[in-house]
Length: 100
Image (cartoon, rainbow, N blue to C red; front, side, top):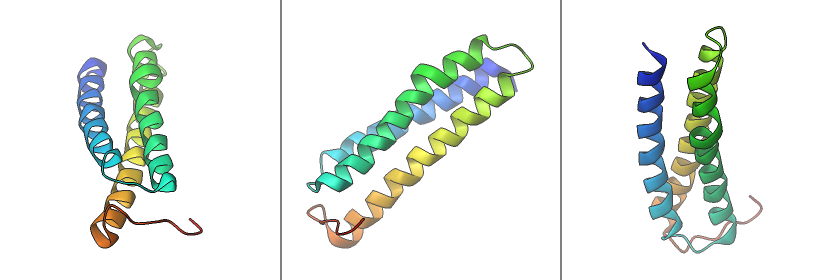
């Protein structure tokens, strides 16, 4: 698959993930849960602002590394969001983290 096609797919998934993280940020009240979501947002920013641009202008020998790192970072952000989402689904948006 061409680099620009993969990059666009990753960008699209990152945009969707950002929308979900933003919506969840608006629902939770606990500061630790918000910090967890903000970290996910930072990772998504890294995908968009650092990893994908490097992939698009990388030497052909390094393109795969940049794309795979972008995909891995996107997965980490999604896992973090799902973790918080499960807490909210189980305990409600007013859940309070203790010792997390």
